[in-house]
Image (cartoon, rainbow over all chains, first blue to last red; front, side):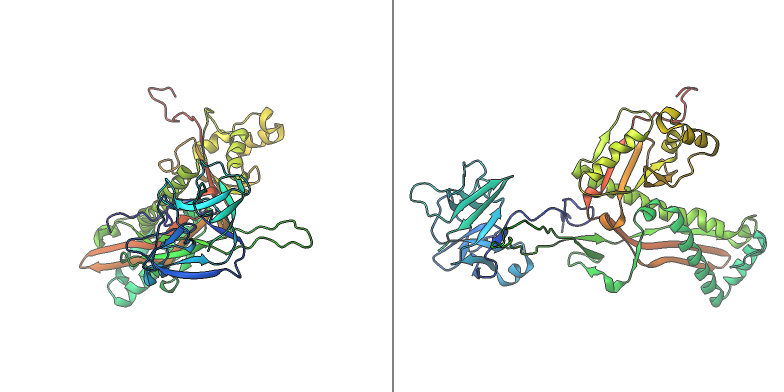
Length: 155
Length: 308
């Protein structure tokens, strides 16, 4: 190891008292189907990203062109269990209400706006305003303080 | 220890003991006891965040290197909400955060002295141990403590630069507010003796006649300032004049661990007495919002060509 860069090792490099904002499920925790998908070669996901199902049954980060079979990631590859299994955990076939900072902040999103999951300009997959024939993965409930609250509409 | 003996007699007995295995063990044990008692009195880091003794079983190994760390949890977020009778609150999947505190060693220099020269000292050898070992250890602890504090401040921005040339209640108030704003409370404040001297000469119009009169005669003899614990240090090379820190109570601040205890080693090789002291500690702040600092424009108290 050439560089020690763990910001959660003293001296701590982040405010650890802040709330997790990448994803917080507000409704549906008990009933949501949590499904593990094998990772496509080289694929990585963080909490609150979206994973697109591939033809071979693996999941990869979606491109800027959204596809229908895309699922919300509730446990990313930044965890050691994901390293052991080579899988990522997603929510499937169960609507939930959640809030996240992973969305396209320069889109004009209002309550009720249809949202689609795709690759954002920041190199992560999140929700953006849906247009045209793009699949609808969620609908906005509110946007406040850089946090989007939404209900999912996943297949 | 040989209480009540004169210094030369003590030094003589000290050397005689080192000629036997049993004697070495007794001397080492006595030295360790002395070190433990004294170091707790001196280090300001220990007064702000009292150390907790841990054993190997409390620690975790790293997969990356051959050192030890201790992982400590950070309190997770929680909240309540007002609801109609028919509604239910939001759900929260608990996602706690933790931080790792790495251990490191602080060691004194290895002191060497011939037994004959040791006998020439007019003060007990324990004084040498105190002055050359104990102070070195506690000073390094404090340097690391302040380095970590400055690292936290660099992230939170809780550093106020003031044009004031001396500390007063207004400056202390500005310092405390940086902590209080984050729903925390200042547990203690740390300043050096130069700023403490300045604090004592505040005019009666600022602190009131009774206190000004009292301080003029007896000095500021209270353990608190504005109801916050006051710690004064003379380590101006660590806390330079004009730099004043505020810290929360230890429960909101961070951790300070000592692995086992301070170790004292001594041996006699022919006519040479050799000894050193070391400890394994880990200290750091898990809540970086719990520290604030004010930097005043205090002039150097040492005059240059006769003027300040």
